[in-house]
Length: 513
Image 1: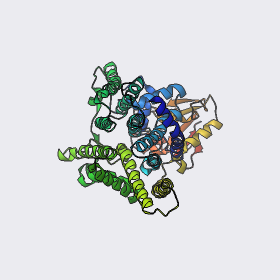
Image 2: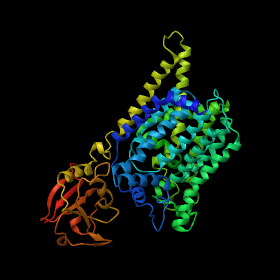
Image 3: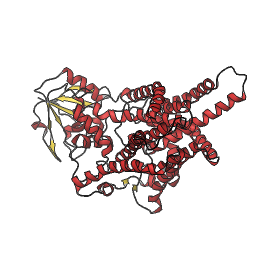
């Protein structure tokens, strides 16, 4: 059976390599710089591992995201490679997994265009490079489903569910499912689809046992961390807390119900929503005809949408003030619903174009070529509309948010081991957290060998005259004047010389003598 799978994957290899190349290329083209939000919290937790916060929060307990980053940090040190590798490769893994699922459920054509289309979903592209859990967790779950469908879905080959090879597949799928939970806990709701997949593939349910055991072993990692660090195996659940937000977002029931559609239209336009909506309608109709592939896709969509919407409505139902269970007004929370929507939409279009070709037998073109051409045209137009709407986003590095890259170039030209850069210890400002990444090249090699010193301990700051040598850095993106802060943080003294300023005026370096 492994040989049969190897032959299948060999045939798919060119498509897989192409999708990986495109996914990685698009991520690099629209890369975001590191920012001081959840992304940097995950990164800092990862590089400090095995040390974890004394007071855990749900972010610090998402060890499935942080452990791979910790490994990369051990190899490359503080670097862009350690920060960007997981999100970029997750985009590629999601694309390839969607391709394999779509191919197994329908055809290679449907799988390929589904995997290609998801790369250009504008809402996903906007988060390119952000170290966040939603995309990696979804990619792991999709990869687990892809593994099961690819290995057991071809009934032309003899299937021995009790073989060692099959056991390896069950265990591997379980590891991927379990790891998706370790990345983002709410992905556990997709576990409800596993029995459905076994039913579709006619796998005896007793083979759920090795899959479940490997999932439990992954959960055991979380339990072990909880016991070792916090003497509580359920610390992740205790660390979870509703997120604060505005009352307007919390109380608007119509927006809660329509968040996904509104977010999709905002960047992708009505066309992308229409295609996905028609795909769901097509799956609904075909589910009544007991077509297993559509039952699976529809179940996935409904599972995510219904449970997420209920979670969004609970604060309204119980009148919880100023909090939400899921921040559904952020598109990244909706990433888990994309695989079935994308595959369903492409499958609907594919069936439509195949029907047209069969209705026009006089056309001297193969069915595969006809459907492929029209799929490419329709999806290209949809993708182009979305990418065009976000291409000038000022948050992308390509559009000017490259101030730290400019600083790196300056520091590389002025490398002096005797130099000092004074930085703010405040976590709300970029100096302590982002700067170390840019005194090194992307692979972690130092390009500036000076040292850094702090200007403060908590709220106690040095006076300007006590900073008497070296450089002082100002990041205006994160600097809000305040009576509690010394004025030199945002208004440099006259005797400080400006030696570097980024083109976007956000980052400045002053020489202090």
